[in-house]
Image (cartoon, rainbow, N blue to C red; front, side, top):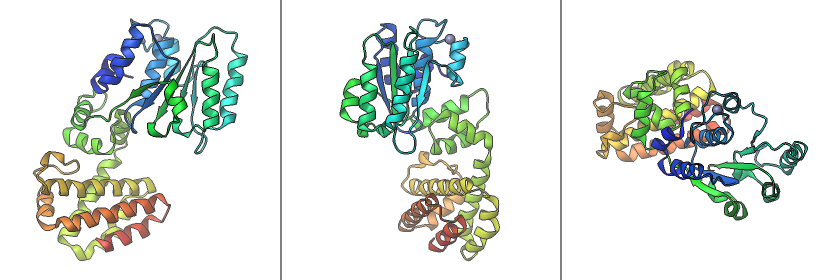
Length: 330
Ligand SMILES: [Zn+2]
């Protein structure tokens, strides 16, 4: 878990705002953290919750080792409540349940924290209920709303929250952080690939530890080789290599994602943006071959077909069918 000082390196503005209000002891009763996936909204919320409740903070940094901090980190603290959308919306009943719980334990003086993820899923009604009970006098409550899509948060909520923007991480800063991690050893090539898929450290470490991503990268480069050198064999390749090696649906999806990254690499390389490759290394012979052999028109068509295939995969169409159609279109 990061500290505020560490967070400041990756989210300078957001951490500075938060650190200032913590230092001046002026914490709002409601925050809206907005930022795309992977910008660290949940970590930010957890850190804030720990800061507000820690038994032995050092100035504004929570100790991360006391009982309270540990329980918050493992999601087991009775005064820190997570609300997740139930399907597509956060329903009134979910809020009413909270409200009830709140009233029953209301005699305690303890501070309560509500973390509402997917806040764009709040219905107007549910949102109003939340705001109402948050603003009741005498309640020592902090609400932290998280959203990928700040635009779809209704104005009544926006106007009552302090809004904190989390910026997407700069790619090279993210790669450096991965390389510098002490608990795992990630080399530069792998860091580049990981940074193309996520800018969340935990997700990247998980990809790395599962390892399948590197096998998928091998299959993807083999497919590109087939397209360049043994074009007539591409359909066979799907059945002999691609499908048998990428067994699960999520591996198939990852395969398409990496193939999209590979084709984008080739496009960037053709445009002279060599530092913008994620799957290939810049001296890679296969990349050189692809750059000279594929026209830009063909690459853009491939990308179009790939995005379409990715959609079909989301719609639960069988991977075999998706891949067969895709390579025939290539
Ligand atoms: Zn603590």
